[in-house]
Amino acid sequence: MKYLMTTGLVASLALAGSAFADGHLPLKELPDIADRNYWVPDEVNAEGKLEALQSVVGAAAEPYAGTLENPLQIALIYPSADTSDFWARNYLALTKRLEELGIAFETTEFASRQIEHSLQATYANQVAQDADLYDYVIFGPSELEIQADNIDKLSGNDGFTTYVWAFHTPLKDLENQPDVWFDFSSAAGALVMCDYMLDRLGEGKTMALNRGIPGITDNQRSGDFKTCIEEKGGWTTAYEHYGEYQREGGFEGTSLILQAYPEAEIIHNANTAMAMGSVEAQIAMGKEKDVFSTGWGGTGLELEAIRRGELNATPMRMGDDVGAATAEAIRADLEGRADELPLVFLGRITVAHDQMSVEDIDALEQEAFRFSGVGALSR
Image (cartoon, rainbow, N blue to C red; front, side, top):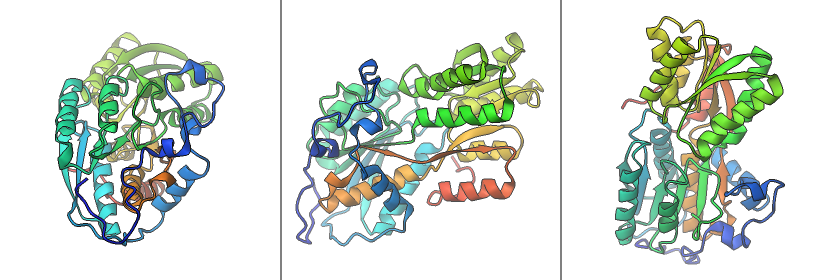
């Protein structure tokens, strides 16, 4: 690493990932552990560490007391060229929290779309080969299992510290775990959304799904939601369309649903991009008042659509938590406290919907986007 602390703090920057400081994984086993190729947060987080970091993230920044010889060099490899503003917002939250902490830094971004798996792999190889240029690497995989080898490669590189964004399910077969995974629990969000939909719409409904890319994220966002609402509410699924998390996929899937499956009263979308495409298709066909539509994540675009009456509900992340938590993890690492970090950090999720007052939506938005700012980001 190129930076130097001159405060006499212990030079523990080469510590292995926080999970390995806690002991071999998993730390405990949940009943269905044998049925999964990944661990869930409760299996790998030592007691109290997640809550401690969440508390720090929700509080005012305490300035870093150390001294850096040079600004930190941070590489970000993520699908930030997509419609969702999750990546841009957490970039802003990361950088603004670092500024509040008084930590000098420079960033290099390697952007792609979520379906550009090979391009991401090229970026990962480039960063790994240029390890001496970077102190921290933040990797937002296009899809977890597709990018598993690249996560392993980056995490095993001794030249920098590796953090993963947008996933919270550490794969069991990774030889090298990232230092921290930062995410919102898609499984928890699916259950929150399931309960909300049943409370609002009742039992026995017919729905259709615009799913993402086959893999862990969609299995949770779409699959867990489907299982919950079918089992608890007796809902029927008329059709499932894989839209690859793209606006075009949401548009095409919704167009097909509206034409071929008119019995579908609800369209569940697995991310912002597909939700926006779905809304466009409904408006183009004059059906926007006939279908109950959901998004995922509570991004600025989704909240604007809710205010306009085009989108009905979305599981809303307190979005800036991921970026702010990453900044606090960097501070902890610089101060030799990497062993205090959880292996998996999770942000909070609630439901934003069209029956809320403008004031209530505004308050949620202010809290969620306290660093990146309210409203849709300019692209």
